[in-house]
Image (tube, rainbow, N blue to C red; front, side):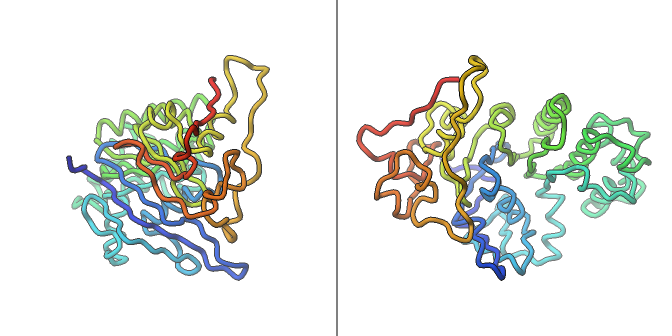
Amino acid sequence: MKKDLILDVKNLVVRYETEDGIVNAVNGLDLEIERGKAIGLVGETGAGKTTTALSLLRLIPEPPGVEECDHMKLDGMDMLSLSSKELEEVRGKDISMIFQDPMTALNPVFTVGDQIAESIHLHEDVSYVEAQRRAVGMLELVGIPGERANEYPHQFSGGMKQRVVIAIALACHPKLLIADEPTTALDVTIQAQVLELMKDLRKQYKTSLIMITHDLGIVADICDEVAVMYSGNIVEKGTLEDVFNRTKHPYTEGLFNSLPNINDRKAMLTPIKGLMPDPTNIPVGCPFHPRCPYVDEDCKKPQLERAISDTHFVRCSAYDRPGFHINRKEK
């Protein structure tokens, strides 16, 4: 059966050409997201998650950035063929992003109401007065009293600023929402409130979601699928059931094994040995092979994506070895 895709990306490459060398940030990434689904993009800092998000919005600065892609479609629209003006019309309306730090995402010299209304006024055929009215409604939708629309960002707490950022991102009911670690700067209680708010609004607007995070607990709570990134590419992708309960890639195994055991507080953490490779000098073959406990000569050759099932994919030659199995520790 043909998939109803909201996003279809094939062979995305992003590199930064600097005086110190070429930084290979994203390396041949493929990504499909079905309409209405939420996918978690997880991995260590430096894996290329945020660069991938910015490239989907066509916001990679050129120079020094260079973006190449065989195919990038948003709800059937060819993102690669759009002019700068057309992209401005798409951003905020068809695809929106919640940036990582709410403290810097808002303009300090404009009221929060004006900042929400600006997005509505730019993308919808309404007067500024109507845009202001709708901005008040969006504030109330995210749990902020409408009368605070005339206040400035410095008058809000971190959690409330993040709610304002969410209101801006959802003001025009985008088809795809990208959330780049939206709870990193918030305390645990506010994190839970913001995540619950995002779940409710996503259901209300039937918005597809890319949740960028390093927190597997957030993925389990809010996402339908998970894609594990390492060194600029997706090394394992599948449903939550596939990746959490039928782990196939050694790097995914390492992520799960490095989580604390809530049932045994004395248990030692099992970190992944070594460091993420230098993006100016990525190892040949599987980029994880210098850190992998299952490495052999095949790992030093280019890795193809292997389909384990209709929903589960992995880039790892070890998966094909007789008797190979992942050593996931029970938590």
